[in-house]
Image (cartoon, rainbow, N blue to C red; front, side, top):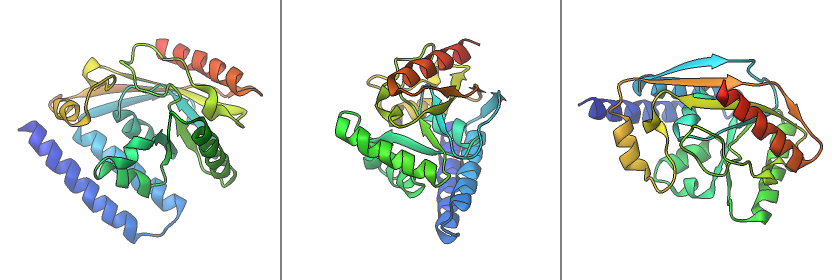
Length: 226
């Protein structure tokens, strides 16, 4: 029964807020406000309680975090105003792909080096316009106890990033490997409460993308261990 109620509530909230969003002004501020309201409403529906530690970045920045689940999107969106970089196949997901595209998500083909260069250009253009970007440079989600090596391609042209670490109270939140979305989401909706911890770290700088990727990876691992 809980899963049914939550499913209906999530669908209704998402539909109403999407209509309000498209009827509103086409500004970054409006988009950020609506995404944050949506993330907080869905977090409440799913029983997610969040603790936040560390200084939240502001202005134009690149946020780099470990990737455990699609729930990470809610967790970050309710705390900071960012545009996400997501796998290209997410764009093809029914409903969710269109919603992600409508709020400015940048899609990348992880198997194409040329596409990584295209996305890096889009990211730098967005930063120059004052936007903030969120990356999951592991390239895939994991079971959450450690951080997979970071792929340096998306660090091209970036000299400063803000690390963050995400941890959940229950292992069932993790979505990785060959898990499929709908069965996992259905199981997740049966969990009455999920405690999530989001920790922000200090700025990491480097002049080389590979050095920056390694240094940021170390910072995210350290934050996760805390």
